[in-house]
Amino acid sequence: MAFLQCSFHSDVLGRACSMNVILPQKVTTQIGMTSSGGGNRRYPVLYLLHGLSDDHTIWSRRTSIERYAAEYELAVVMPDGERGFYTDMMQGPRYWTMLTEELPAIAASFFPISTRREDTYVAGLSMGGYGALKCALRLPERYAAAVALSSVADVRSWLETCRMNREEATRIFGTVKDLIPGRNDLFALAEETVKLASPPRLMMVCGTEDGLLKANRAFRAHLESLHYPGFRYEEGPGAHSWEFWDHWIVEGLKFLMEGRSDVR
Image 1 (spheres, rainbow, N blue to C red):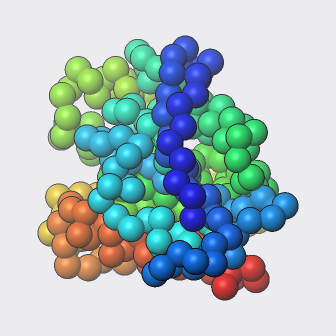
Image 2: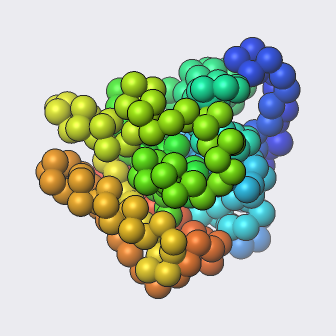
């Protein structure tokens, strides 16, 4: 596998941005890991999103995501979403537009990654879990599946309890009444997407000692009440921690890759 650190200019944000990228590479002499990547093909791609306090480097610093992705010859794109909740802020940058429109086009122009829906996945933790679910539910024609770990699944209750500085939260989302018109409420988005013939598959995971457990259970109940197809929910011992996420991203990758004929 190749690990690339990429700086690029975002016209949407009007400034320089960063992403880390993992790409399959054909190797024969590397000790401890093999890969049969290479050649003239475009690889399936996972957009992997970080949480509120982190950046595009955190998944590669805290987990073995490069080794995990090698098993599936999966490209991984890890963008910097700053503290914007992967949202076009009410008062601030348009992180949603950058993530879902600009970034895929730039990444596909730089690297041999697929843009086909059946090859495109999204995952994240905490704030990034919210972003992953929103990508799948708001753009179901773009993503085949999503994995959300310890996600901020209920933004409405999150805003009401205000787990971050209220002024910062208001700049991102506005008020609770702005969530549905802004298409930032996962509950409302799920009600739209479940009506489609083939909505993206979803996997949610949360630790039993995580402060976001109640919100994750609430969204699980909502999806189950909608009879959302292809939905998997898991809980396990753990808090809002990298020990938990490093374990469950492995299971998340298995979920994303289910049914692929090209998986080794």
